[in-house]
Length: 433
Image 1: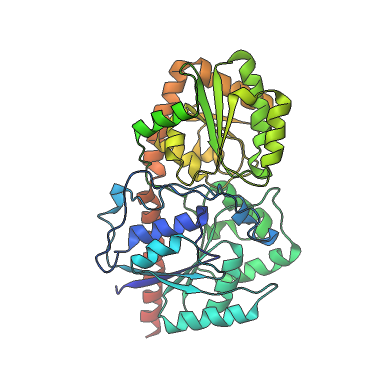
Image 2: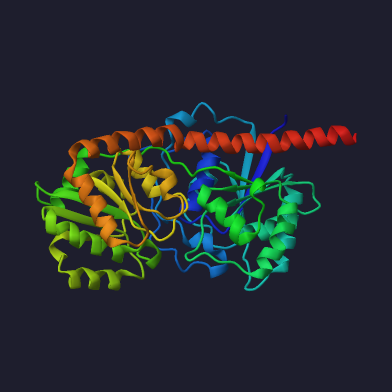
């Protein structure tokens, strides 16, 4: 089989969950050109501060991600042997600017095509995408998120190019329109494979987008394990003036209503009644900051809550936490949750989206009812008060991460998908000839 050219179509390559997945696939399945070595030094995790207003509500999945992603430059050691010359990859961004992830990928020889989507339905964008597909001998168009899929699949229709659509997340509360439910089965007819980042996301595509269940394959988001500097971790604890006898709870998420920090704070205020020697670290920033600060003051927990602001490389802060919390109203596959598991952190999460698929209740952590401060506080106290259970969750979380959510696992799934599609095309061509 000759080299397979996969073109990823997305909004842009700013720092975010979707973009991290694209970068991980490219890093894992291609060889860097011009003898460029991929950087794998220390904690290079770059996290998105707040992309909640970047796109309109019809692009719902783009809003539901963490926006806070691990290892944009470090590479899972398991990946090194698999990168070969089977694949050529390029990236087409329908919006500009390209974003920071594009810089390193360009240095590794990845071609980029930068377009400028206009408001409304941009028919000229379809023509531009079609021309790029034709001029560059593309074999597979891998569309990430709904709107890039719409433009990509229409441009590729009748070109005999294979099309993959990956849904990376959903809006909250989830919804659709009768127009989308009408058009999506037609778009799906011209799509060779649909993938979703969790079973919950798959079910949402069936329920809200009218895409047949049999068309959708689940491929979980995955990350390379975090690398942290213990000396820096100790320095951070000292700088934040966290008492030595305090347990540290923490979360990493943009300040957005969908992350439901308010519920977390209410739950934490209940935790302090029984466990006053506890500190909550909240890493992130965004439009919800003033509401969060007001809530902290109203609850009278200012002395026990630390808002660090946005940290582009928060891995060492995550290492400082004894228990990782995720209170979101909606999630796909949370990258920060995977990061916490890679550091053997016991987790308490809400029953939202893909969370219960990642954290198995009573096995790798605790899953509580969505938007329930009482249940969330009781779960936190359960882990704080039971040292044996805390250790069990910690060990089990890492084992689950290592068995399912490594970058290697995800890339092997996509490699198989790409190869199968091209094999089908070759078989079809042989029959015609």
